[in-house]
Image (cartoon, rainbow, N blue to C red; front, side, top):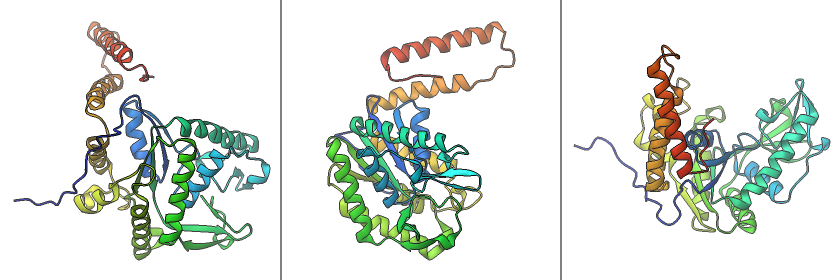
Length: 316
């Protein structure tokens, strides 16, 4: 008896991810879950240089600014609640010091420009279709930074608007790197602050728009959202807030991503990395014991052997 429906996920055979791949992840906070896994297994991955970006317009704006090598100046930042902010970036980049913020913003532009030119895979996770338009400047912001809502107009991007944004992203990226594989996915995190019905509308717009641009410029789709909504349709797979996937769900989606997008050879290396990571996390009862010293020696030998085989892997 089969008590669960399974989403058929095709294995990527032409351009799988391996330890020579250079990855750039941009988008919703779920991209940080996947990015955290890639970091744990020591892949060459960079994630969200400007912090979490929730919607397609913010991602398009960031990629456009990156490719055009925008230089942020004090005209692009503002002071609020004792911190300097930028409407193009997440509050994780904000700082009490204006110069520090500008330095971080411009460093993100330079480093991401370099990464875009070199990347083999660009993973874009879309979180919502709902956006906030700053009334004073008539621009859609990436983050409101808790500025009073009366300063913004809230609106939902239409399917056509999202499609145009995604097409622009693909064209921009291909203008500097036409070999990159662009992988779209939709965050399974529910944005219930927008409302239950509004969240479903938002996700539906994202799904419809993404499927209109697939197979353009090496664009593909991974069903993170569908895995959560269908295969894991149970609240035991959610965190306490009932909105975010819990660690079990993240691990399940990651397992599917691994089987779909990561090469078999790389998966073998991942097992070796995992063994070393567990060893590094081990806390002995007696650090000075002969047994523990032998354990450290064996662990160091494993690290050196793996690093010789895969020079890109670095253990801290």
